[in-house]
Image 1 (cartoon, rainbow, N blue to C red):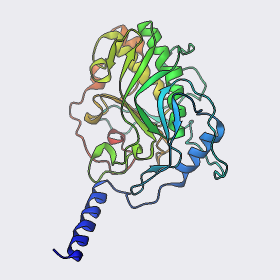
Image 2 (image 1 turned 135 degrees about the vertical axis):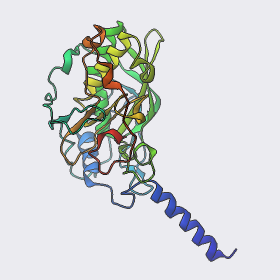
Image 3 (image 1 turned 90 degrees about the horizontal axis):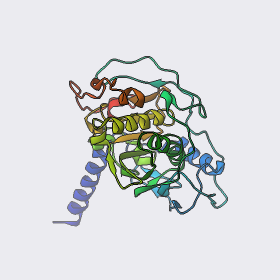
Image 4 (image 1 turned 30 degrees about the vertical axis):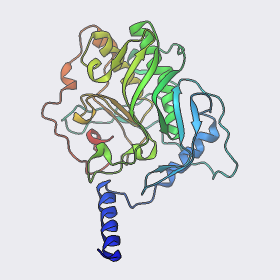
Length: 312
């Protein structure tokens, strides 16, 4: 085999690999991503400490990457990050005041619903007591600063209060199954690039309580009343902090985890599926289980980034 043939085959294989990674692979990374990272770091919203470590920049392959990646091994507390001078002027972090799309699986488009302003009481009656402390992230997750900031708020004002409310003890460990990952949505060939490819998404599969009990999203979502109430309150809290939240019942790809990200949807809406329910409804047996049904829902590749069921 000649050297020219070898180079041709290698090059062809590389092109096939890149093409399989999803549409938009050869585009440039959107400038707002860099700007959002810089803004977050300059604000001090995320602080270095035992649970957060600065890493070297991730550049590629293709459009994938994070300019200032951080390794997160705990959420709910931190101390100040210090980076070298020379960061470019900060841009805007994705808006936290846009409407939210709250639609049911298989249903048509839903009218936008009003979203509480940041800092307002958590929706659906979730308590706002001070968090018991940080939770270990297992395994450690590589993420961008803006997402870490929202995750920190989710743990402190959503996850820990819900755990104290329904179990009388805090969450000590959060099990994640996908953080930074250079791949298309849901790993589907030809799909748009996932927010995971920019450290802008995290998939949560379970929690460990202080007494050592482990609660998985897959089993708990349709499990005991307290487990279901906790997970629904956790999802409801996420819907006010992230631009995309997908839980069991949104589609088959999310049957075992809660996906959260800070994608900038072209429509300006947030996506929260299935529509959040109060833990109180769950605990009192008023939960319409049909909201979690996958019946009639087909996994499909989205035509654009505003088709919520396949965003991951």
